[in-house]
Amino acid sequence: MSILEITNLKFGYNDITLFNNLEFNLYREDHMGLIGANGVGKTTLLNIIAHRIDPDEGKISWVNGVDFSYLDQHLKVYDSLTIKDYLYKVYEELFQKEKEMNALYKSLETALENESDRILNKAYNIQEYLEQKGFYMIQSKIANVINGLGINYDENWILKNLSGGQKGKIFLAKMLLEEKNVLLLDEPTNFLDAVHVEWLTKYLSTYTHAFIVISHNTEFLNGVCNVICALENKKLTRYRGNYDAYLLQKDMHDKQYEAEYNAQQKFIKRTQDFIDRNIVRASTTKQAQSRRKMLEKIEVLTKPTKQRKVKFIFPFTHTFNSEALIVKKLLIGYTTPILKEINMKIMFGEKVVITGKNGIGKTTFLKTILGLIPSLGGTIKMPEYNKIVYYSQEMDERGDVTPFDYIKDTYPKMDDKDVRSLLNRYGITSDLVIKPINKLSGGEISKVRFAKLSLEDSNLLILDEPTNHLDKIAKESLFESIENYPGTVILVSHEKEFYKKLKMKEIHFS
Image (cartoon, rainbow, N blue to C red; front, top):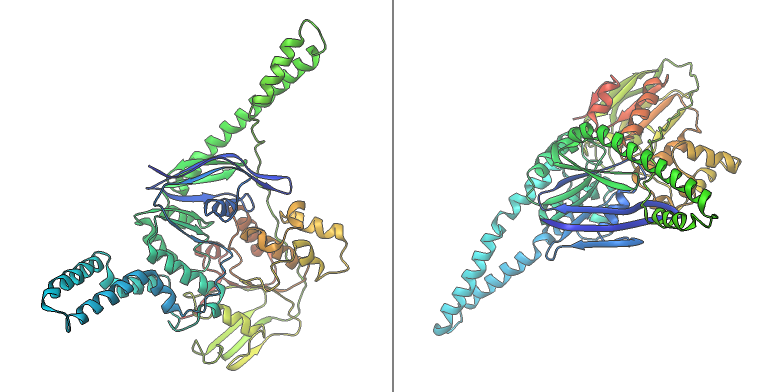
């Protein structure tokens, strides 16, 4: 049974059409992967489904009684609650029931004899309700989800003070505990390491309700999805099975669509030629007018598009040093050390990946060696000739600036035409150049940031989760650029498939 139906959906901005007469159904048994290249409108579609954006045309119909939760890429949580209180809010109604039950039992102490049975029955009914709802298993449920997602922070921490990744985990935990009819998940694995991605994969694969998940992690999609919907050519195509099954079907579908498009274009041309030849002849004008009306009623297929490959560029400048980084007895953290002493030597030209469970201190280490936060002890030696390019997990700059201003503010002497040309090479088209960055997709934001980095010479790349939000083709291009980079690379990544192919030296934090 369909629990969500979308009909004749149209949406666009700045004369750019994202969807045109899009049709879509979500069924109760669907564990759906929503895929497509960066910028085709996957997140926009989820926002429309979640009633955060109104479409230009079309109807979004949810079945009565269906409720959903939405985890988006640009998660903003300003709640002053503690982590514990935030998660326990899921069961607020049950805790109120418990208070009511305890009050009833307390009232028995002073109740009249003829009232006791009524009070007891009411209390028993509430207790039975709580048992049915699993109230007495709440602590173990919360512990299971917290441990599974690798949430090892103090439960008394204030939610609004957490990092983006920490907030993402907490919000995802709350969603899973709520067990809504539908989960809408936009890149849920971006803030999880391999172990916790595996846990989430197992959890979602046995989830008893429907969900739609956007992810560029193909291994994850293979593990959780029974249907794939591909957003391409402004339409949504449904494929049965997981991501591997989709790949087997896609080639055949693409060839069929291209054949249909070419056939329609030939028909339109023949018909238009007939109209042009015969519209002014009195004997044939009615035929020509009839064919013109027929053409007007045709739904013209969108021209098949092939995803443009982005080339990531890291301009290299030579260094005369043989050593890129020497760390001795380094202690990292904000107030107290979060790891034992770190000793490390990285030679020039080495490519190193730093691994370890989420929250162990990988990003803190990078920020410490870069001097963004002070060390708590030990020494860091980096040659003065090191020229560093740093890609952080989170964007520090204001999100309301446009991609154009994001580049221009740093390089004011750069010609306007060159700025636009640079962004275009990274897939940021003219309509996106003047759009606030926080209105772009996660993949588009990443490409804007990489475009800026391409203007900086370096001999040391420090990349913190650079594959987050990038689609398959973009990841392949980034892989090639890192592989061919002659300088030193220090990478933090949870995508084992990505860094294993690079054959990097692994340094594990534990």
